[in-house]
Amino acid sequence: MAFENLSDKLQNIFKSLKGKGRLSEADVKAALKEVKMALLEADVNFKVVKNFVNTVGERAVGQDVLNSLTPGQMVIKIVNEEMVKLLGEQTVELQLKPSNEITVIMMCGLQGAGKTTTVAKLAGKLKSKGRKPLLVACDIYRPAAIDQLQINGDKQGVSVFSMGDKHKPLNIAKAAMEHAVKNSYNVVIIDTAGRLHIDEAMMEELQEIKANITVHQTILVVDAMTGQDAVNVSEMFNEKLTIDGVILTKLDGDTRGGAALSIRAVTGRPILYVGMGEKLADLEQFYPDRMASRILGMGDILTLIDKAQADFDETKARELEKKIKKAEFDFNDFLDQMQQVKKMGGITDLLGMLPGVGKQLKDVEIDEKALSSTEAIIYSMTKAERSNPDLLNLPRKKRIAAGAGVEIGEVNALVKQFEQSKKMMKQFSGMMGKGGKHGGKFKMPFGF
Image (cartoon, rainbow, N blue to C red; front, side):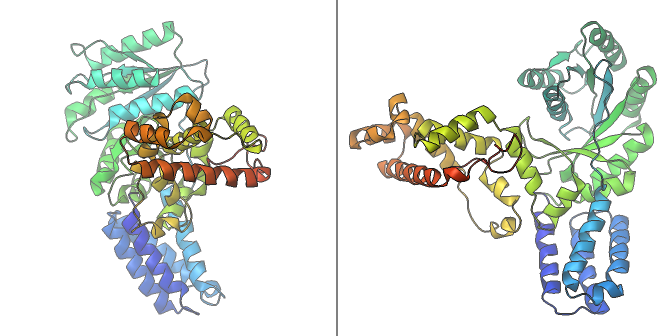
């Protein structure tokens, strides 16, 4: 995650605090000096850092903290609370009109921020919530921008309105509104042109659209990897256009991530979503409290559950539960569970959301490719072999290994792992289905 280095530094600072039986005012000030340096190195805006450290310091040197039985924990609690405030405190939803009216969303940003891809991601998210979105191709300058929007729209099953690159963006937007009314679309998302840098011509084009069409939400897409520049861009767009919110992309990259900690404080505008990967499904609602927890190394169990919920198939889970209780679990089920983990983002990402696990995994190599190798082995089996693993004798295993391009030892290891999983699931089948949502039937993927 973007905050890996910051998270490590903060955890080391807090570890030294917790190691002290009592804290003096000097201890707190020394620790906050290190926190200040860590935040600045993460590219957090210097004014934001100054205010943050001062606020934490004022609270942390109070008598209630210094005389506490666990002063180190109290300081961490204060840092967490102030970081949540810094990130926005409340989760802000994208404001939509009732479904019988049209909500117009104008997306803007600099070139390279991932705006066109984010437009399609947002449309897919709104479609999954029962809306009928229409994408509008108003980026008439960047080569292949219209084609990119069309391709991504098709992947999401969302319609795209285009008039090519020979018309003014305003005229395209006006025609799209007429098309939306005639065809009962209730969300119109306008993909506007980006530039390599902010210029007056771009701003005038965006202002012209807002002046002639009722735009309900103006959303800025910002690349988190640009660090402090992302904050400056947000501030300038907000001054010129009055944005309603920000979508921060590439937050999964190897970046310092300070933009996420600065944008709300500098612009006063909320972060609505964050892009956490290349796939069209990798657009997550932004939760200030969860992000603060991840930065401070406390994990993010709620997002982990959300990911599981999104890919949860209750019918399949009930069928699988019955199979396990009857010891009928087979390689088809094993494959289903493995693919569910992949859809949720991969083992490394999932384990990183568990409290205390992310730091432990730092120097551990988790071979995600092993999942692909396992898939290849299962796909090399016949339908009968997948359904009845007892058929897997030596000649069959040799054939499967050759088909999957692996050594026979890998096939034997998978069969052994499968048998162990099957025994374990049979043993714990009585414990399944307790707690959670979906009528008490929610479960995390198993088999790994």
